[in-house]
Structures are given as C-alpha cells and as structure tokens.
Image 1 (cartoon, rainbow, N blue to C red):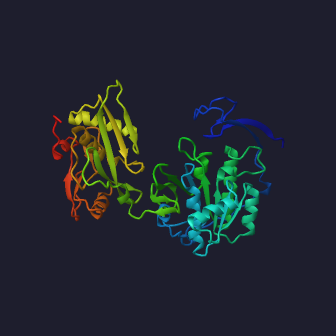
Image 2 (cartoon, one colour):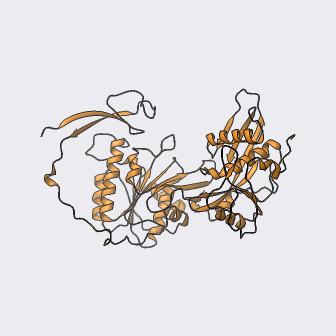
Image 3 (cartoon, helix red, strand yellow):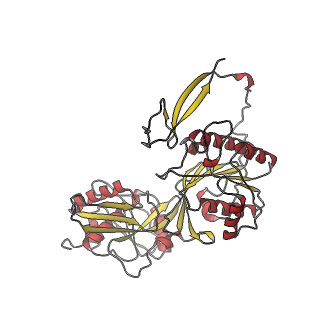
Length: 453
C-alpha cells in the first residue's frame, strides 16, 4: 500500500506539534525551536503480529525483593530501594551533582555483587576516572564505556545479559541512526528512551536515565518521557549552598514528594542524617521575623526556618519577593492579615525566605508565614523553641492539617517546648505545650504584639 508522507513541525522544548513552521512556538513561546519531522504512516499490517498469552493476576508471582543501594537517603526517595526491572529518570540543573550521585550509587551497588554498566554520552572514560578518583570509588568494579549510539548500547547489553543496572548519562545525547533528526531533539529523545526501556524491561534490568533540564527547571525533552518511566527524581539545590535535595516527583513503587538530603563536598556527596538540624537557626537569640515551621516532606517530618522582612517603601508598587515558597500564596496571606487583623501592608515591602534552599509546597506553612510577617511588622521576636504550623482559610480561620503528631514528635526530638497549631482532638503524649489557634487574629494576643509598634 502506498504510504502517505506528511510533514509536521515539533517544538524542541515543549514537544507541541505545528502544521507549519513558525518562528515562535504557540505553546511555550520560545523562539526558533521548531524542527521538521517527516511522518510516514500506513494502515496496520497484522501479518507479523501474534496472539499474546493472557496472564492471571492471581497466579502471577510478585517481583523479587528490591535492590538496596545502602545510601539511605537515595533508597528512601525510591520507596525502599530499586525495584528490579524499573526505570528511573534523574533530572537536575547543570553542575548540581547528577553524575556524581549516579557514580556513588553504582559504587555502592557493586559492593553487593550486583553488576553495573555506566554509559556516558558526555564524558570519556578517562574523565569519568578522574571523578571516581576524587570521590574515592576508582577501585570499584563498575563496567563503563562512552557511546551515544543506542544500537551499539543495546547490542552490548544483550551480550552482557547478566547485568543488573544500566545507567545512561544522559538521554539527551543518545541517538538512533534510523532517525534523521539530531541528538537531543524530541523524536530522538523519545525513540531512544523507548528502545532502551524496551530492552531493559525484557531482560529485567534496572535502567537509570540522567536527563537535562530546561531554563524553567523542567526535564528537557518530550513530556511523554516522564510517563514512560517508573520513577522521576529531581536533584535540586543552590550553587551557593552545599546542600542538595533529591526529590521524588513520580514513583510507581513508593510515595511521591519524598526527599533525600545530601551535602556536596570535595570528596563527593555525603548523606545528611539529621535533616532538621541543618535548617534550624544556630544563633543564640531569637530574631524578629523568624519562625520555625514543622513540615512534612514525603513521609519524613522536617523543621525549617522561615524568615520574613517587612520594610517601608517609597515606591508606588511595594515589592513582594519570595524564595522557597509560592508567591501567590504570600499575597493571599497578606490579604488575610489585612482583613482579619486590621494590618495594612499596602505601603510595605515584604520579603520571605525559606532558609537552606528547600522549597515548601505544603499549605501547612501558612500560619508560620503569617507569624513571621507579624513578628517583623511589630519588631518583636516569637517565643524561643516554638513550632508553628497550620493552614489558613480565607476568612482567617486556622484549618486542621495531616500528621500533626509526627510534627510534634520531630519537635520534641529537636528540643522544642511549645507548639502553635490548629485545634485538634488527639491525645498529646509529648512534653510540648500545645497552643491551639482558631483564628489568625489570635496571634496578636498570643504573642503579645502591640499595635503601636
């Protein structure tokens, strides 16, 4: 049957499809990112297709136990280790430590007699050796080679079919010689990942794909790439900060939004055992505008310091600057404070910062943010060794949140004495004095803020 030839234009950044070439992508509004794709298609020919045998869910045996890397933070983010045959996508900013983390994970796995192959499309074998010498894993029996040809990689994997882990660094450098497009394009990334996933699933091999990110912090390549894999991990952190956070965005075999915390040193990445301790203030006295928030990241409780600064401004449009939190949610908190507490911040600049570079997504931080803003506005510090958490409603009410006992337990472990939180009926077995806050306006009275400050 005669094949129909169609031409379409695909955005190299977001993957959206256009019927004709345009200079600016309508979806992501990026310039000069469209490239031409020829799609030849015909009706289905089932001559070579076969009937697939059905399996009974009841009689199907569950997979064998997970592979532990013995890096506790990494295993926790993965949901308790690597599930055999699973595919992990690891993304992060340039220079954040993705390749270093991958090499350390493989070094730990080979200690347990698992066989690993590390394929680099960005570095030579000699360059990988330099990194392994620096982080002290050069004596590990990790098999490695440098290649960008997916066909050659698949043949090598089939020849060494007794391997347990295959690591690709990175998927954007891989290419199939059957496609005319350049490496890194949407079609190459999608097709290369599909071929690698197919062979590793058939051979029950764990596949770890390292991925680049765009300038907006999204994983580069087609969005379907995240749907094809089992787990999506994002390695984040500030270049000015030594701490790195490994966050689970998607996980078919464990909880999402789980985090692991590492410290980047000259000898590689080190696990941070007491995560709360690194984010807590080390100054001896309380400071205006500082509040300690008890949060939940995935399944672990963690204590964070939230800083707020309220300052007068001469500009007609006051600044609202946020680091580590949602800017829109800050605007909502300011409106609630004005409505419920009678405090007008329309002529004030408001700055908010989550110390340590961690990004908070929980709405349970509302009460801590409001307390920090009030503390800075009235120039009076909050009580020492106090936890604050709770979600605010638009009418100023403090709403209950999940896992409050776990938050109090973490506060007790870190030596905190007081907690300001939503009303609840659970039995408090901690040595922490619980102060129940029903309305955000109670904070002025509870913390003894004076309105003429």
